[in-house]
Image 1: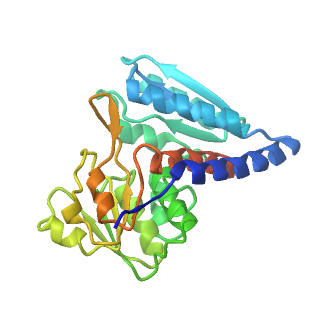
Image 2 (image 1 turned 45 degrees about the vertical axis):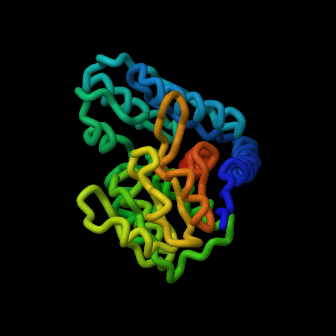
Length: 277
């Protein structure tokens, strides 16, 4: 058996083309969707992510503004930038690029963002709406995973989904989205005992742990759908959380790069357009 590789680039391209048409329509009505990104410091990975977001916005016709702050900026300075963006009616979406330098209070900054402009879906109000089954803005990576499953006609209802990772950015919202689609969901983490036994029960296995090659073939149920959310840099190359050999066991597998990461940016554009609506 060799897994079907889920082409995130192709699915994201179709989404971006559709969004570009909707953005053009919105502009004809006199409104240009506008995303503001706040970047603190010179983190190389963050620089790449922000550049990719800028390029995607440009191609879709979305206005993009990047506000760059020094690595040593004070908490008050960053918070004042967020407050100014909240007050700017021309800005529809606000994204504070994570991670922030260690001296800054990330939770406090995210809590300041107007929930109606929170296109990353990290504000507690948007997290709460997702928990209550009334989502507004959903974190882009889990949302991208759901759209990728949909694009490949992979049923979720009634399936056992296992999510490895419990972050507020991916693990927890991923579990909520799968649950909303009537999957039976198990969340695993660093303290989970007998992890291999649990993952081998998964019809859908989502790896979001940030450890290269963490998921071995022995952890995968034959024919399972394996979603690799990991983005790790090893010897200058980007690799995922799932060992490549898992493709010999899985039925479907997302590649890294070229899988979920492409969908994340497409969903950011979709959330920005929704914010402009």
